[in-house]
Image 1 (cartoon, rainbow, N blue to C red):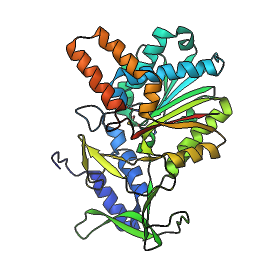
Image 2: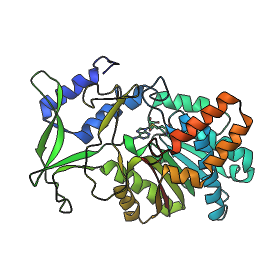
Image 3: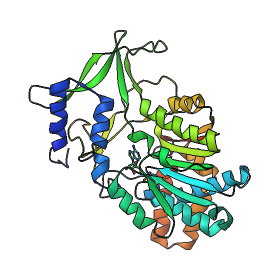
Image 4: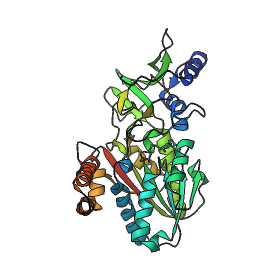
Length: 349
Ligand code: SAH
C-alpha cells in the first residue's frame, strides 16, 4: 500500500474486544469501523473527491443529478402531481446530488419545486456541515434516522448508501457452513477466521462465500414501509449484482482510490460490499412494495437522456469543457466503467 496511514485507537479497541469476547462477525467489525461514535470512518471525515478516498457519480458530473431530477419530475406527473412531496436522501455525501437535483427542478419545473420539502438522513457531522454549505439556498431538515423524517408522500434517493451497511459472510467448505469472522493472531494483528454457525442455505450446492446483509434488508424494508404508508417512489443506486444466491467475497476497503486490506486500518479506510439486489428486492416485496425494475446505471441514465444532455452542455462549452463532459459521460455509462456494475432499483408503493 502506497498511502500508509497510522494505526488507530480503534484498532486497539477492536483487538481488546476480541481478546475479551472472542472473534467478531464481519458485520460487527464493519459497524464498529464505520460507525464507532468517536473513531468510526463515517464519523470523523469527508471521504469523497479526488483528494479523499473515493469518488461517486454526483461528484463526477452535474448530469447525474439532472437525470434524477427528470426522473422525479416524470414520477411526480405519473403519481398525479401531489401537492406536498417529502424529498428524502439517505447518505447525501457532500450534498452535491441534492444541490444538482434542486437546481434543475427549480429552473425547469417550478410547480414541482414548490411541492418539495427536503430531508437528509446523515450520520457524519463533517459531511453534514458540507451539506449545509452546499444547500444554503434551500430549506432542508437533517435527521439521524429515516424513522425520524415526518410522514408524507415520499420521493426517496440513496446513492452509494446501501454499500456502507454491514454484511455477514458465510463460507461453505466441503458442504459445511461457517461464519467468517475477524480475530487476532499472536502479534495482535487482525486476521480473518471461521466460526461455527447455524446458517445454512439449501439452494447453494457449491463451496464458497455467501454474503448476507440483514442491515440492507432492514433499510430497504423501512424505505418500502414508508412508501406503503404514505405513497411514493424510491431509487436506490449502488454497485452490486442481481442474480439470486450469488457467491463471492466482495468485502473491500478503499483508501485514496486504491484497494487496501479491510483489516489493516479500521476507522481510516472505507469498508463496503457489493449490494445483493436480488435480496434487496425481496426485502422490498416482503414489505409489500413493488419493485418496478433493476436497471444498469447505463440503461437508467441513457433512458433519461444523459447523452442528449451531454451534447447540449458540450455545445455551450469550450474545448476543454467538451473533453471533460465526454469523459464524465464515459465514466458514468460505459460498460467497463460504472455503467454495468452500478444498478438502479426503483421501488413504488
Ligand atoms: N450519496 C453520496 C455519498 C455516498 S458515501 C454520493 O453519492 O456522493 C455514503 C454516505 O452515507 C455518506 O454520506 C455517509 O456519511 C452516509 N452514511 C453511512 N452510513 C450511514 C447510516 N447508517 N445512516 C445514514 N447515513 C450513512
